[in-house]
Image 1 (tube, rainbow, N blue to C red):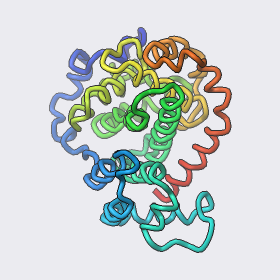
Image 2: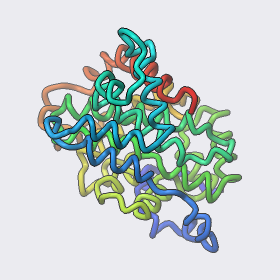
Image 3: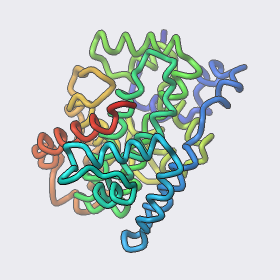
Image 4: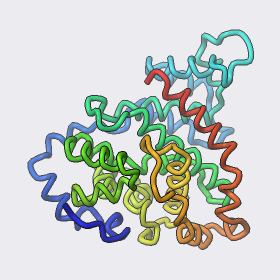
Length: 313
């Protein structure tokens, strides 16, 4: 067991972490077994991440129709109490029009990425994991817009992918990860601290490895590695700060890994906000407390939305 010594251990690159390198020896087959982002999802994201005037709704509906599970989820959501305003919809084109591009993205990503979490590993409910990821993504996009960050959709994607290291840990180190999750939940501890003490590395380092395996962009990989130590970010510190703050607010709002932490994750946000303010000038005109004070209404909306999207998955 290793003693937790500070946040700098979260952002130390995987290549410099001896414990992770040793733990991965002889496990190449397991690493290769982790699927990449589904092709249908990538095609859909490529289509809907264009400028709004360029998005072809017929093309969006056609791509969704290639995936039976995704198509069913979109129709179910369009006919749910959250969105239905009239007769039941039975066409994907109608569902796309009813839901809108933003919600289609949320649903597509949740449906596609839920399949990546190893259902056979009972240590962490995949739906709980993706509830946190989706909540973080949605809050990150909202925060990015509030502070004038240039690419809110990149903030959304970064928030969604920030914890992918848990996928690698659950697949390659199931017993150790299960023990760490159970210990963190029993004591209400920050999961990263327990991971480091039990495994010698965290989901940040393993996530960096997986991000590079998936050929994610350098700034997304930096978010994955540095979201618990924003001060270490170099490539895009503003983006890392947005995701770090969204992650804290998600965890504090009981949209974390299924339990509430002590101390409250919101208790140490000042340095992250300072970094955000240096990189996003509009953040200087507001405060983190101003953003958080209005969070009850939209966090409840996010909770309902995410619960509806994860239902049946």
